[in-house]
Length: 310
Image 1: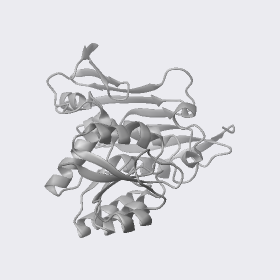
Image 2 (image 1 turned 90 degrees about the horizontal axis):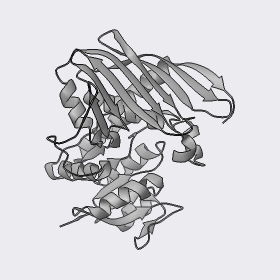
Image 3 (image 1 turned 90 degrees about the vertical axis):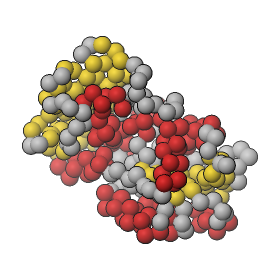
Image 4 (image 1 turned 120 degrees about the vertical axis):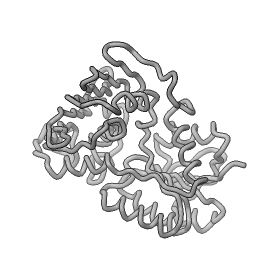
């Protein structure tokens, strides 16, 4: 029997990832959407969350795909109406909001899932397994893409709470916090902020663990040409390169496949929805906010420099 789910926020990520994953799954049925400006053909759309909650008490599950700023308020509404909640990344704007959501979900007895889609890339599990018993030496992250391709004409990303270049950069931090055997912290940060924007278009972070500097993460939204999503790590066992956003793995110069590792479904979002289904079935939650915590550390420590208008 399929589970009915409502999708709140019908932007690009909902259309390109969430809706196909729901339709392809045998476990889910898209029963309703919420958007003041868009809709899905053949699916009942509501213009507000309040309308959905009032009209469809039978829908017990929601996925929230709005921009980050309103996510916490929307999630609170849904949790307090007894709904299980899946949140796009980042799950909230601050760690404090995350903790509040965790407390509310426990109070109302619902499952809460902070989905970090980059962790579901096909080579991430293999990278984590290889690094499990290593001694880390250096880390280098290069995460560069063209914002004109990924967020055309989307002003919310440049506004307070919109995350700027940390919108893609947090994907790299989500992978790092998943695969590294030790926790990492931000020792220093440099942000580049266009003169006409409130959020950064580029950032350089100094990564540390156990009071030792490991290397840097470089995020840049001004990339022209091919996009770069690479993580390079050296350890006492050699060199690991996780490229193409976590889908390609090279160890000591040799390309590796994911054969022999558990990859239950093809694609990041189908695996996210399988995980969400399992959480609901077991009555548990999965709400890791470590990647967001690193962003908060970077923002609190950052030296800011201005750049020409963008």
